Image (cartoon, rainbow, N blue to C red; front, side):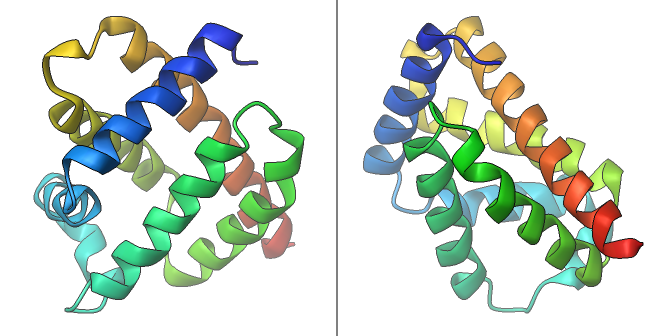
Amino acid sequence: MLTTAQTDLIQNSFATAISSRDDLVTDFYHALFAKAPSVRGMFADDISGQSEMLTATLQLAVAEIRNLEALIEPLRELGAKHAEYGAEPAHYAAVSEVLVESLQGAVGPTWTPEHTQAWTAALTVIAQTMLDGAAAADQ
């Protein structure tokens, strides 16, 4: 599980990233499509609606990061939906990597290796929970 120091880093860095970059999530999608072009077809041409949904999901996850139990069911449901869209396990790794890079770019020079470790740990838990939801829906 995440430590208090990690959850503090996640919450503080997310607040900084969102306040410093209005287009953080849109930039994330552009970087994701460049890194993993195979996922582009899963999204509408206009990603503004998708960007709003991802922002809301990230805000929920960050707000509840100290209470991961509260996130399990919503993340499992989200994973089942993503499976319907064609999301594969490898996509989760690309999403995590690009999201960390996007956050790092938005936070700037105060970003540390500890931020990367905290976000990577959290995103690993999130991805695994979503994948569990996808697997359960597939049965």
